[in-house]
Amino acid sequence: MKRQPERVRGPDWHRRYGRILAVSDAVVLTWVFVINHVVWFSVPAWRDANPALEWTWMFVSFNLLVTWHVVLTLAGTRDPRVLGGGPDEYKRVINSTIVIFSLIAFFGYLFSLTVPRSYVLVTLPFGIALLTVSRWSWRQWLLVQRQHGHMTQNAIVIGNLASVEHLSAVVGRNQSYGYRLVGACITEPSRPTHVAGLPVLGGVDDLMTTTLSYGADAIIVTSSDATHPDMVRRLGWDLEGYDVEIIVAPSLANIAGPRVHIRPVSGLPLLHVEQPSYRGASRWAKGLLDFLGGSALLLVAMPVFAVIAVAIKLTSPGRVFFVQERVGHDGQTFGMIKFRTMVDGAHEMVQDLTPDTGNAVMFKMRDDPRVTRAGRFLRRYSLDELPQLINVVKGDMSLVGPRPPLVSEVSGYAPEARRRLLVRPGMTGPWQISGRSDLDWEETMRLDLYYVENWSIVGDLLILWKTIKAVRSSSGAY
Image 1 (cartoon, helix red, strand yellow):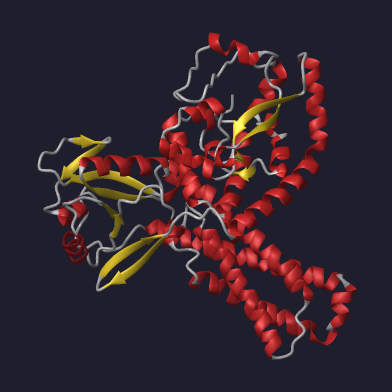
Image 2 (image 1 turned 180 degrees about the horizontal axis):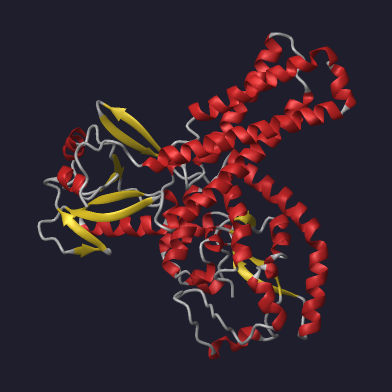
């Protein structure tokens, strides 16, 4: 089906989804200020502090609600480019909220106003929490829609065979970003009919006609000798007025956005790539988060430890805990603590077993005969890993990081794989939330290296949040 040249509007779902978020934000903010004033009227010390300004502050709250909503719009929190995947949407929501309360503090100081304490103790935390939960809920709904082929952008990828295959694999792994590849334009003179499962629509000589004919909403240009800057510029001129998005995918693999900065020099956009950071204040912050978070979780989990210990002793003879030597930060070994899930002497039986997964380095079996009855349940819901909180508090491990490898695994590492050891291993990480034992070794390594090169505190918090979902689904846990 061909698109008529006079059709110049982009995908309608952008506007529909933006309106949904605008209404949702308004409802959430209204609810936040209702909670604020209920609490304010309920606490005599707060209410009596400014009795004459009671209705004044309600008027201020209404105007603040409207301003907050406007700032969320101006900050691009509903920009289609940040919806569906990645942390940018949440960052913009949080930054907008901080801006609002910074303005409150500034004007309060400027005009000598006593700002109600409920604004800081109720409105600020509830605002951030409820807006974040609301956006996360809508994102889950959007992901379901995209998994069914709705609310996506039809995209054509341009490049040579190797670059098209690589980009197709990346887009296929990340449905949340909403790009659906409908075909490819190949730069080589000799072109197959299909590449990476996509129909080859032609070359780069008449991209405008191809784009309009196949109803593409976006064009993704990969790094290739034939996709020179003049071609991209001319394509932009040809598609002017058609609301077709042009995306350039540079040859930078596994580098997160915060490390990449664009600096135009005489019309040439230069990409500055920051070196990975393994030291400094952010590392101290991560260590503090690990110690405080690990200690709190360990205290909360103590009753669960007792129940699991009884279950292990009742279902199989042997010790409650299993300590295994693993390789940690900078190649230092440590004893990783887990609840015992296998029969005693399980390590001596491994010679007689054959792994049934695609992972050639890590030994994994879906129906391992060494696993006990209680151990199967513990593994299914990752409860056997709870004692690793002790390792986190001791400093051997982190809450989030690469999977802690065995000594035998490290001995077979390629040089690039040893970069996993630049940071402390984690209780959870990209491996655990992306399929765990169902992943092959190459995919496991790619995820861990990406984490090592691009980690951040916000990214760690997102992984911790996604771990809850991964544990509930128990996918890849055996």
